[in-house]
Image (tube, rainbow, N blue to C red):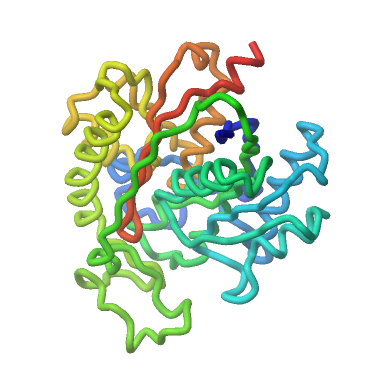
Length: 337
């Protein structure tokens, strides 16, 4: 039996960077110091007008390949998570496969999942490797949520940033990832939804869960997402620990989707976790949706204490509504010491 092992991670952030000071100049009427204290976001990267999910996905995957001297012919599969694809047809992963110059017998697929997307992508990669359908996989996340947001939207513009990541996943004889648990509650689909961006016209779309206050095509009910997160993630953690035969004290660090500071601090209190075990590092990038967990891992891998963490828990949650969790040990980083 082969298992998935996470290898190097590359991060791509667009050149344009928008700070709290930029927003203060544009919108002096916004209470930005108070807003940023709650969100934990003081700067975000914004994709250029001619820069889209496939462009960022290619850039970050090519960066990963070149920086780590990965033979292109060794890649068996591309899995791309995005909720802002270039086109409804064709699949963005197919475009990226061609631009990267990968083999034509390389599998490629997109999946549309946001804040829980990285955990789901790892689960898909693990399944492909366990089933011996692939031995080396590129897992890419690429999000341009800012293209859904109106410039006058005080709620969303102060939270979301654009970014892409690429993770190399290899087959290994040692299990360092899993078990996994996933959950879905489609009844909450209208808590975070983009209108007028698909085949279904807005006149026939799901109504927003509450009144729409802004002109953005993206709608988010922050209060409902907070309630959902606090109700679903603590049981997910308990179930995952039970499935793994572990105790809460066995987990050295909780790598959570970087939604907002307020949400992560609320979860920390609800689960009575040590705040030192729940890193919050979105200050300079914002909520990058499916890219947030791999960006966090990339940041933490640069710290000297990272390899002391023998057992991590990955937790993604949000749009869908969906959630997922997995245990992980970063064998790749430990082997490099």
